[in-house]
Length: 259
Image 1: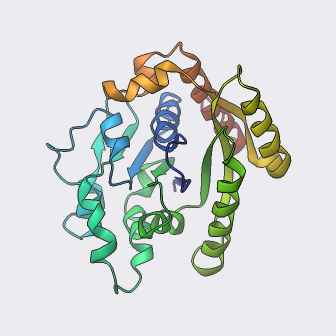
Image 2: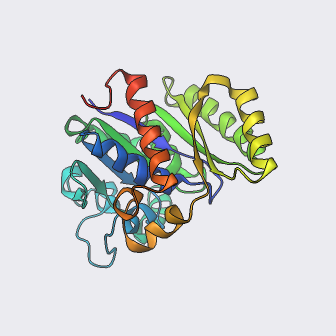
């Protein structure tokens, strides 16, 4: 069965979608079958993989609404071994439509159960909020990766998120754990980046990935071309950092990069 990982932070602009796309692509290049589930109504993972949201067939919303089987919402990407369940703006209606529905927090878990045997990793790209869609992701996931921008308020946001994870564990998903905290937008020229990284490592220890993701022009440009960084500029520092993160995760699981 797949390792189901939610990429979550209630704060926007910290690198959730960048991580979902580029970690997914890096793991796919290692020969692992990867599925990205775009549960953000903004659909940035969807467009970041070059899909036109106006011309798609089924999407995650259709699976939520029971209009299609989970497998019928899967779309192949330009990278071998990397698939996506795309998002559309229709997902904005899910929280309203599911009010009063029993078990509404577990719908994504049911969707994933129908397709997880096909994949080694399923990465859920969460919206920048802690509403029903993110709750569905946290109920469905075994673990979370938390991208944290190296900025002044980073620890404050982490504190709120860890409280939320504690509540989800107590009420819905007792096995949910932090897979790792990922330091993003690290600027070697900025002493604040270094200070924030030190503080996060001090508070969370070995839960912080050794890999840090730098500020990188190529990483910022790649989504506008509908490509993961590996297809846009694999020699960039951003691409090399995500390849390093993928190796870290594979080694942690004992898979090894080439197996």
